[in-house]
Image (cartoon, rainbow, N blue to C red; front, top):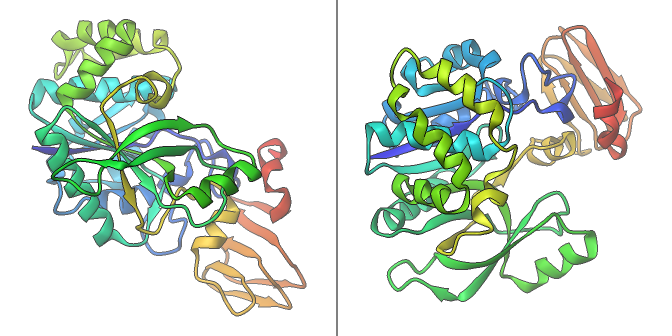
Length: 348
């Protein structure tokens, strides 16, 4: 059976004041479309997995929000991390849990706070990747076709000469690269075999568990010891004991950069990680002057290239700004130059 794992434990601090530690951006209707990013993520897998095979790994503080926003998934499919330990322990925990219930599971792992504009194309790529991992011991990662020299993403270098015989759109990964400087990003863009690393993975449960055993034996042992308590009333108590001792590391460092059978499926599906206010402006509908207004009654006069997110206010009037963020949430108002948005983390 196919399963999807949604990682929803992040804090989204760059989107303050809309995103707070109490309610991070994955639980907010960022786009003003009537659904939160978490709900949109789950919707993307309609027809690929049944609701009973949707899993959410989140921080213990957000359990009630996940239940409220995804009432259709079983409560036992909401796995609670007692503390943040990056993506590797999170993926290890859910992998061992799924394996206990379905030893042949085929799994997609996705962040909860990204957007995809072309859902039909995304689903086609996911289905193709799931077929491949069902028939092989390979790990597949989605590589987003870059359309600009982006310095905010890691890159995947693919060998475009080496596709598989049956799956012409799957290519062997040569290497993973850290976020580049602008000149390097321009070089990557010109070379056609570099893709943005979206952090979306497809694998068979046996494949990923074996990878943990080979490349992260200490972490694997910890979760092997958890097996007897999985799906019992003692599970959370045992998880709370072992999780703080897990290495704080990403799945990229822990597995992806070490394993051999790694393939990339290039994807051109209108993806964005919505990591910044600037990316929200880029992905939102804009007026003739490049402004994006998300909220009920927003009036802009003589404004250019601004993003205004004021969903709780009855009426908002802004005049004379160029290249600004205006955002209000829970009686906190932010007015900040878009060019200075990296300083938002320091401001609160």
